[in-house]
Image (cartoon, rainbow, N blue to C red; front, side):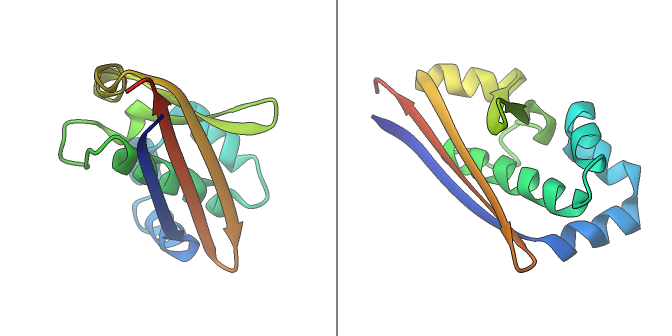
Length: 126
């Protein structure tokens, strides 16, 4: 049973602007060390980071939470397993997922024509 669904679209140029303006302050506030390391090694670092930003926003929506719910951006992490992106929750995000009895999290990220999009589906018994 689907317990949560979230979609988010991010302008990659917006992420580039934030990176130029705020440098590491922006990156370390929003992304984990592993996410920063993974994306900055890629030729399309800003697209990679924009995709992860979209995934975090989509996860907030799927959890029926917002940025002001006490869940920090870094408590929602995009990890790569077997070449596919997956979500990992920590702290209050993990607590919210446990409260909702989430048993499976699905994530899809895509980039094209200056935009990154992410879709998050949270499943459970309900």
